[in-house]
Length: 128
Length: 112
Image (tube, rainbow over all chains, first blue to last red; front, top):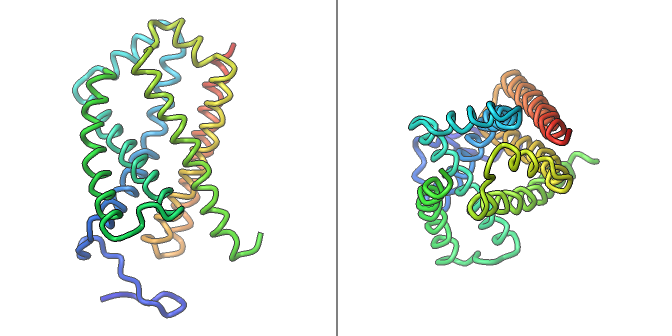
């Protein structure tokens, strides 16, 4: 089922078959959201360039971000950003031993999972 | 740097850049919530402001490093055939450098 690494330790990374505990699920989403954010980099630079080019470009960038599809993408990216940010803050705190004990690290994982989508919806409403 | 120390270096880079990226994003979102740019001139003046502009270029550099370390970690975990892994790392590395240069150009032009 699992493969052995070069130093003989078993590794098993099939995400479709592992039943992850909540912090593990949150951790995978940290990676997924990170990949989404990397994919968004060229799009973000394109919109930035367009918006800075001239007043017409600025208006075009506004129009571009106004459609329902753009809003959906924006919502996904806001979630990615917030999840990545909150999970990242949680990891930095764990690095300095804050919240590393049993109920706390589980509760903070839940907090990240819930806070990111809720705030993403609120922020999309406030920013557009 | 020795082979064993490169993992530590990546670990430190990932955390240092994370803090800068996090602070910058919180500032960006806060600024857009409180005082969104009124028009093109205000938007351009804000991006072209020397302090904001330098902070944004630093952000691009931090993002380049952070994205590289993160994508590298993911590829090392999930892509095992060496040729595919090296190929993907090359594509991602070149893509990130191209994006960083592009972003730096856009930010520089906003100062003119």
